[in-house]
Image (cartoon, rainbow, N blue to C red; front, side):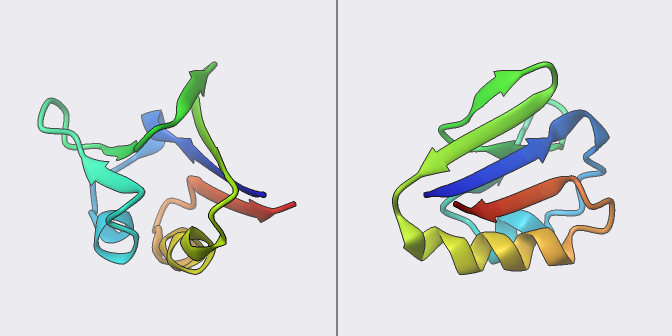
Amino acid sequence: MVVITLQRNKCIGCNYCVELAPNQFQMSKKDGKSVLLHSEEKKGFFTLKSKDYEILEPCENASKACPVKIISVKNI
C-alpha cells in the first residue's frame, strides 16, 4: 500500500507537486496551497492510502522536489 502525507499548513505554493504528480495534487484557488486529492485530514496532516502502485513514483518525485519537505511517501 502507498501512503502519502501532506503537511498542508506549511505549503508555500511552489506547484512542483502538481507538475510531477497531477493525479494526486492540485493547487487550491482559495489560498494557493497544495491539496492532496482524496485525502483525509487529521491534525493538519492530509493522508491518502492507495493500493495503486502507479502513483508511487510520481509522488516520490513530488516529495523530493518539494522545497519545504512537507510531502511524505511510504510504500508499506
